Image (cartoon, rainbow, N blue to C red; front, side, top):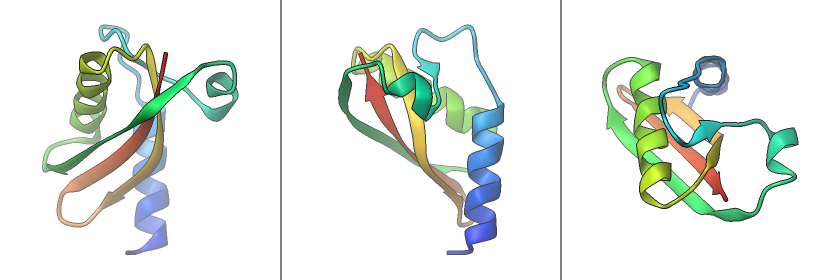
Length: 87
């Protein structure tokens, strides 16, 4: 796994926001004041980084989370991302 690709993917994913979804993307500072619920991940997303964010948000919503924080993201032909979810 190329570290530059991982950092670039994480940066892209962190830069986008979606106000239309209930679960919001947060940073580590915001996460410190929330209760962790576990982790979620998406794999094999072949479209844009915004589709990864949408998939993470939908998974977080389905688990009853109010927020999520991307902890891992990389591109290996397709996008993969892992996020911690919070109440």
